[in-house]
Image (cartoon, rainbow, N blue to C red; front, side):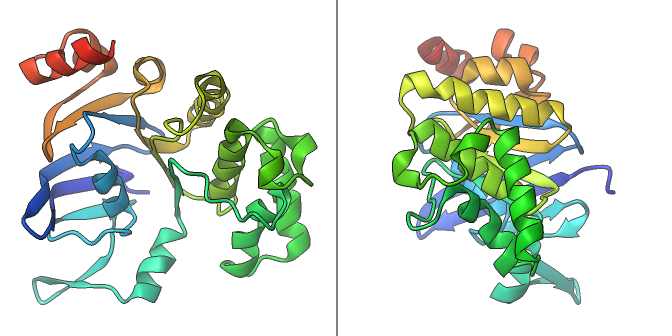
Length: 254
């Protein structure tokens, strides 16, 4: 295992003239929880999608567990991987989105077992047994036969977390996983994420839940306009921030 699970070095990303990421660097050690905060449009979600190469970067590099993501280095230059090879890298990186994106025609159990069977070639009985364990882990063992339309938003998001875990990832990415939920359902999803953090899973979480970041994060990164404004421990960034821009943001959300 590498010293760092994630190493991002001077990452740049642009859409036409819109320079979304302007040299973002950060490191996350195995077993750490890193929270990304910042206003809408600051580049947090784009950066997360670059980590598993859902978005291709234009400059810099990203490594996960020591492996260069999305590119191969040859002759001193970086060459983008074919889609099939990039997808193979993605198997080790679980991602949970704002929207649950569950298959509506599949039960909770089937949604979770689907990828291990189709992508990794697991035997159905093995994948389904693991899916039942994951449903129990997220507190939904009684919902194995339920379809997404029969579940609340919080329950659907917990199934989505279990689905990501079914691939046995070494890294979990969360892109504002509670932003689409009714307020009373947020807590149940955050509790599952806290349990996951306590189990030692390496996690990068884009969130507006300051309380979660304060309680669970090992490091907090505040981004604005495509750059890292401030990084440090939860106390350093959330309680005693150095930068005026960080203080201004926190004054509006706390």
